[in-house]
Image (cartoon, rainbow, N blue to C red; front, side, top):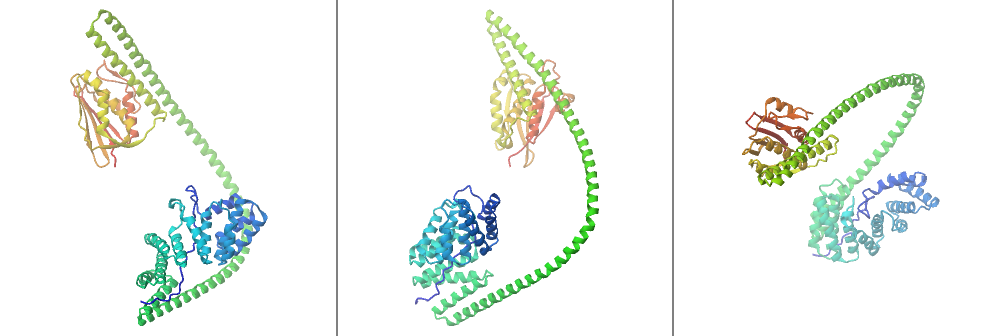
Length: 576
């Protein structure tokens, strides 16, 4: 196939402004930063006007006020911004030599210098200074991809390919064009894809590889059917007509020529329609402005009549609002005082209960420990080892009970003062119960109590681990305390539904009556006396359990009968 003479027009994609950050910490586009600089340097009138016109794409006005700013100020930061604005404005006006001069005046310390490289590369490409353009595009390519924000690296690859194509360095051109194609096929931007297909086709035609080139011209043409851009459609059909002429398919070539002409006519008609619409819009705006002026005069007359009545109404409204506000504040203050009084009463009641616990239980525990130690000393002298062993076990039990009481007091106080840290996570229930069993093994062995963990190993709860352990420790401690020797304690679980799971702690102890259950479940009840008069509990541990279960979005129930044991039923959310 002979070489097709193609009008060698390489597509160069020029974008307005995209952020291209030097550091990952910069997360704002150039225009956003420019707005912030205008606020920061609000006293610099010329700079503010230049940035306003630049954002609104008024390039001539941008050039005027940026030059005034450069003439009136030596601030290095603003000088860089002004040269950058001028370079972009000249580029938009197709004055590429002037754009090149201005962009070269921007210091490399400029926060958006990668954008300077981008625009310099595109400007030099327009000026056909391809090797210099490659240098600036390569500088951008060095920046890590993760630092590119709101900018398409595929366009840099495409422009590098175009530069190498103009320099007849076909291997490099092919490498970059296909790198760009890979990214653009993922992005799915039709206009850009058509452009890269045409660039690759031109690459192959330049090397007389007509068969490969035709494939990409056809791809560009097929894809152009999906766009509404008449100019893109015109160029795609024109390229296909040249392809068919090269293949001596003159009928097809003529059809493509006619199609290209139709798209050209459509484009011209569209431009005429837009121009007419713009004229009609301007005429309508002018008519509307005249009507607005007439209405403004009428409104001024009406406003003069309304002002007196309006301000009188405002005065009355302010007086009424002030009265309502003062009354509302009085009521609000009264409610606040009442709430504070109730809270203070609650705190005083809690303080009294805590003092009762500390003065009674701690005093009793310490006194029991003191008495037991005296007996221990006497037993050491008589060398009665059986009694000695019994007293040591008794001392250990008293110490453990006292430690548990102090631990509960600490956690209860932290909970009341909202200092206890809660972090919900996925917890393996079976493992937590195994750990609790291990901690209480000596107490279980002391009373010959059988412990059974029948919880499934597939259950995971979404709770705070530390508070869950406190709940289980307290309930197991109570179960041991109120169980007879050779008793049994069982931990089991029942999955209610996909969201919640029941944890059941059952013992064969002394149980309790209905009144005791109500007393324990009553909110705020600290002291509780069991049916066995020799075993007195503060109820603090159970109160702590109830509050921690509630904070874990759970529920708590008790089922019990005297001398038939007790069943504690806890409900917790499962891990989803």
